[in-house]
Amino acid sequence: MESTELLLVESRPPTRHVAATNLLAMGFRRRKVLAGSFVFVLFAAISAAIFLPKTYESEMRILVRKERVDPVVSAADAGGLSVRDLIMPEELNSEIELIRSDDVLRNVVLTTGMHTRRASFLRRLLGPPSTEIKIARAVRTLAKKLEVEPLKKSNIIAVRYSSSDPAFAAHVLNALSKAYLDKHMQVRHTPRQLNFFEQETEHYRQKLAEAEARLAAFPREGGAVAGQLDRDIAVQKLGEMKMNLSQTQATIAETRKRIASLEAQIPATPARITTQVRNLDNAQLLEKHKSTLLELELKRTQLLQKYKPTYRLVRDVEEEIAKTRVAIAAAESSPLRDEITDRDPTYEWMRGELAKARTERRALEGRAAALTQGIVQFDESARSLHASGIAEQELMRAAKVLEEKYQLYLKKQEEARIADAMDRSRILNVDIAQEPTMPVLPTRSFSMFLLGGILLAMVLSAGAVFVAEYLDPSFRTPEEVQQYLSIPLLAALPKSAGQTPNALAQ
Image 1 (tube, rainbow, N blue to C red):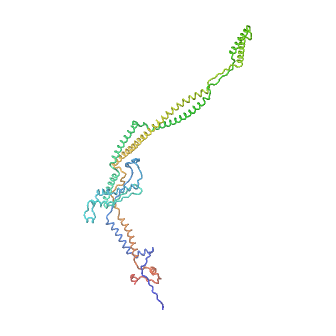
Image 2 (image 1 turned 90 degrees about the vertical axis):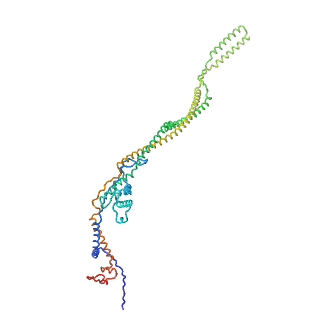
Image 3 (image 1 turned 45 degrees about the horizontal axis):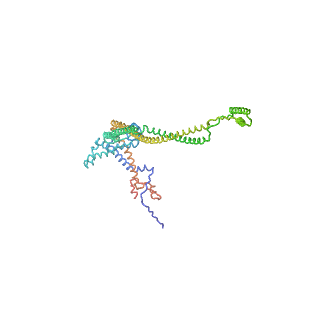
């Protein structure tokens, strides 16, 4: 016997793979779904274009610039009142937040009467709310519908508002521009600024006058006329006197050594020196001796005439004659020595130098004492002038600081006065570059609705076809059956006219 195998196949929905070549066939098979979806969406878009209320958008543009700078209390120079710098993104964002601030929007609501407009049917059923609630709701609605954005690469802020009434849209932006400019001027200017600077200027003017008066009265109160200059002169003189004292002390030491040297050399130096020596015969003495000898010889001759040679008187005369001859011989053998002496100039110079050195030493010692006393006095004077100079510099610094502050507040006062005048003339850093006008054309036209409806109908109808094709579990081609069952397909019967797919499946 032959065995028979039973093939069991699990029933599961077929996997659909849509190829690009089957798109047209898919659309043809689902032409009812495609046509119905397209017509329904296009009809809805045309109905919305006809029955929805028209919306009109009014636009306003605000130019942010830097043509004036309000005074700032700072020690640094704030520059001139007319400067042109780049507008930072933070400044544009600050102006945008100022435009969208609650008080500005509240002023717009109150000016335009938005809170008194007709409310929705549901809100009318809930009962009439209070005025504050109406205003708050109107402010919230305005904040949602108001579009504020900076334009790229510019200092311009674009403000847009849409409404079904074109005149009301322009009216809202006009009220917004007025409220914003008032708010800008209010936050940029403080009313008491000018009074503050005037008070501070007067205060520092009085302080400066008092400081200058104290500085002028400082010399009369014991201070120097020019403390710094006098101190420098005193210090210079003190240095010169100390240098002179050192030189004087060195000279005194040198003079003392000189005096000691002279005092040691003077005793060893003779006071007089021989200047001339002459050897001469003593003619008067020889002549006197010879005369005496002649007289004695004459006396002996006379005595010999009377007495004998042995007589005593004769002998005495002969002895006198012998002595006279001896004296003559001694006088002739010992000539007369004539020496001439004079004061030694070296000795006299040394004595004079010694006296001069002693006198100079006394003078130098007196000068050193005077210099020492002068140094003490100039040192005290320099210290006093130094303290006086410090006090004077302190007064000058205080006066300079007060003068700088006075000049600063005087400048700020003038800037505040100019800013106040600009505020009165409404010269601001923002300006309405484009005034809001009443729009004529609505933001959405019928052609735009029609074009958008056609595009949307095409997309949605194509999506409906794909969804219907994906949810259909029937087989349409032999290849789908062979792919689903994973077995060879032997034969396929064509669909007969009038037969449904369900009948074929049975």
